[in-house]
Length: 259
Figure 1 (cartoon, rainbow, N blue to C red):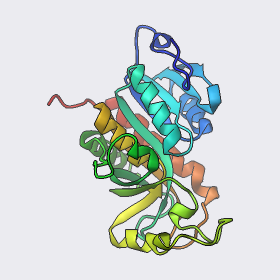
Figure 2: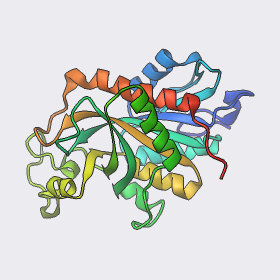
Figure 3: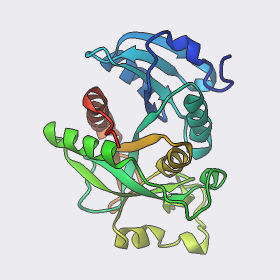
């Protein structure tokens, strides 16, 4: 039976079912990955804009590319249903805003863990449950980035539910009156050596822990919050392509350890 939101079932994979998915918030990015990096691509569903594609890497390895939508609530639905069709390994390929001066636009961030300030995650596990990435998959992403000579930073990510208030955007927001506890939050996170803001990794990591899955997150830096609130649109496509290339090449060669 087809899963309600993702619009396909395990039987749609055929005999060579994938166990790995590259997750993107944008359906356009999912389509780009599938059409640019995969062979024998099959569109599984476009329901609700959650585009999903089955394809094969050049070495013949099957892989799924899927859209998670914006934010943790949408991602939590997609991850749950992908787990039901047999996906074991999740790599989020996203975008983020740097909050550290040494992490410039054009580089990528691989998250080793997340400050999970997300309501959806509270339905998965208690607030104190750690939001941590798979260490082996995370190291593999870093090693691939180094091999490709792509500037890459490893660290802690702030995963929050809102793009404007939650990331302390005032100048570019319709709401200039932040709650008191959010005023200065970016400076506080900077002092805590948190590298970046994004909106999905924390919930993904907690779900992976609870569900017994493997998860990692790699993000293209498209905003430098020490300088401005805005996204540097001119550099976005190039930077996102770097993150995608690292993720795809990592999946091609990664072998989970036998523990």
